[in-house]
Image (cartoon, rainbow, N blue to C red; front, top):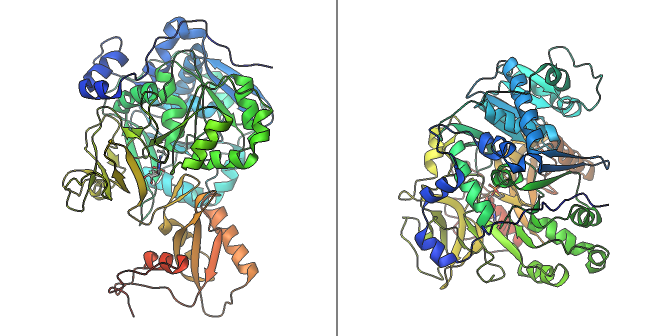
Length: 577
Ligand code: WT7
């Protein structure tokens, strides 16, 4: 059975054809002219991504192919998404949601997740998508910090975070999305389906300034609670052109981004990017399974695929024979993001898919792809590629001086691209820290540039852990561990791992009267997994009698890591004793 239809329309060649020439002649103004086909004073990303297409020949084109874990599938045209998001916007307005309010969305990858993201934008409200694997602490931190007014969730996910809801005085409504029609919401909750039925499917869009906020995604730093990275409608200029040039998407593509909108890839390239260009996007609300993934590509005629190195390494583990069972000839372009893409994986991709995999580099804060491999330049396996046209990337030293080719340093960007973060929600100080090095935007990564202008990833300049492409702050894991009654102190590091990039390892000092044991180790893992998130618990725990600390009492994670890996410990002059 085939689901993906090829739209019978000759594609316009919109890809990047000449990297050097385009970079030289590039102007964001020209991109704006291309995107905003009708000149307007006011904007809304939901208009450009959905409503605009619902007025053209694309109205009956499928915007979203959706498949649930249990084999259920649905499809939505641009016109249907326009009406449903209008209806959802009316529904949210009836609950008192106004421009600037925060609407947090804690849903599996259901159609309602996508519809409510669009609806929130239509209201001029700010969406906060949250990964459905989050636990109560992760959800509480985000809703508290953003002072969210509405939470959209399912009965199951609501139950998981029930214990923290009383800590959220600013939360006025919980909208419950239930697949069962006759669902009776709990007292105080409202039922998505019931309210949708009452709402009109005509909504007068809120017209906004380009600088009005669009979404907040929380991400981890070395210390402190996750930061609310705040993005604005102006980001769409970057979304639009990076989707065309780095993901090479064209009108007749059927595109699959495997990321969840709880991560920036899933928000930017799971919905806004492709829809700004009127592209059909496929969403699978199920777990990783190599065979199932190939079946998806074959069944839906997926042509462009954006995924992560961890997933590719797992597919590689699935073996060459499995690939041969499927007809994947529809695939024409592959991209990857989130972690270093091993040259070995690129070579394997060439062998089994007959396609090169294009690595892309960016961050929650950059809001769009910043460095990439493009169809028109040769790939150097292991390199992240070259800066996106209009983007100035550099390797700098601690004072902001640019370093020559070949030298390792801090990866920095010149501020001013359209999708750059505009704020850390409620924390001006942490926002400013990004621009501390002589006006550069400091990425927190270290890298080098080669003679040909290709960038190569080296590592993180801080203690942030990257496990399976998920960014985890050691402080959050340490804090979660400390909430357990047996834990006196903990230090958390990332430990290199062939499949996941890094795994989380915790060093734990127990309180007086408690003894290390296998059971206790398991209990602590389960505890963090439940409190924080399924991807953020320590896979390894080592009990110890003390932790290396600086004289001011800060845990020296660098030292823990060096000891763990048997590396030289470096400068230990600040060590306590
Ligand atoms: C960090 C950003 C935005 C995509 C998802 C991650 C690491 C990202 C690559 C790459 C090596 C990469 C960096 C970066 N990273 N892409 N192609 N090669 N490392 O977003 O959670 O904000 O994490 O992911 O360390 O700083 P994020």
